[in-house]
View (tube, rainbow, N blue to C red):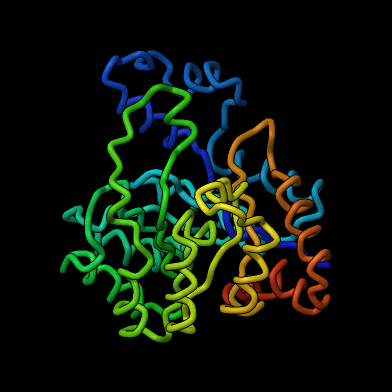
Length: 304
């Protein structure tokens, strides 16, 4: 079975430099990348091409075919673009965008054009904006007008583990992370694939409602899905059972939320989710769709 990962974070040097600049105590001003990685016990990344090469080696070691790499701070499109250029048959590039920034549309046009990226990632709870803001809608219009582009919207509970471990402030507002706010947007752009990670991250019911009403909405299965504890009695098997019932196997994308080295690709996520699919007696053809077939349909490898 071919396994592709629809949700990995590309923690570049720019990522760590951005975190360091957000520390009000200025603890990481000297050698920010090395200092932060030393604090966390993580490997220091090389340049984007070197980090991409390490990811290729890791995917090979884990027998994973392809992966989405997400630029995980606004303004880091170049890093992921370099990774995609290093191995275009292995990586699909996504990038985080602040749609309220003055240059947001220009960034979208450049990223989805010359840089060769495919996904625009919105985190409304992080930058604290409603999805119906005219500036946000203008950005989404531009994404929808780009053939092959995907809109990724983080909904539900938002925590960033690295920020918590470093003691960085996270002034998020999860009131802006309701999947139902995407309903009119999904209806207005029926050809635009919309991906909601982590099954809605606690807003599972709302994510299912949206997916039921809008056939262009996909759910990714990534992370430990610890949000399940907010739903008494719900299990990972129950999540998959209901998601398959409502969205069907063609709109579920396997992901791990892998990010840093030396941990690398988080195989335990695959083991846990694959075991659940087996316990549910999901047909092998449907398991293959979730594991990688849907990924290849949304992100076909470009032919020379």
